[in-house]
Image (cartoon, rainbow, N blue to C red; front, side):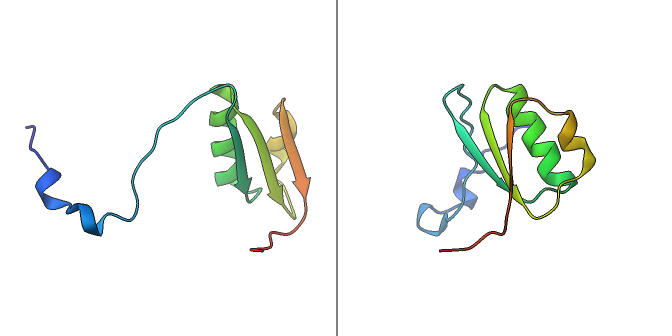
Length: 78
C-alpha cells in the first residue's frame, strides 16, 4: 500500500539522492572493468550514452560491446 515517506527523510540530512538523466549527449565515466562495470556500461550504451571505462583489467564481455571507450590505466583521485 502507498505510504508517504517524505517525512522520514529530513532535507538537512539528505546527502545522496537518485538522479535519472538519460541523454545521447551524456558522457558516463565508469571506474572498474569487472562484471559490475560491464553491466553498468552495457545499460548506459543501450540508453544511448557515451561511455568511458577506466580499469587495469577488463572482463572479456567488454570486447562484445560497441561504441565504448576502454581506458587501460589506474584511477588517481587527483
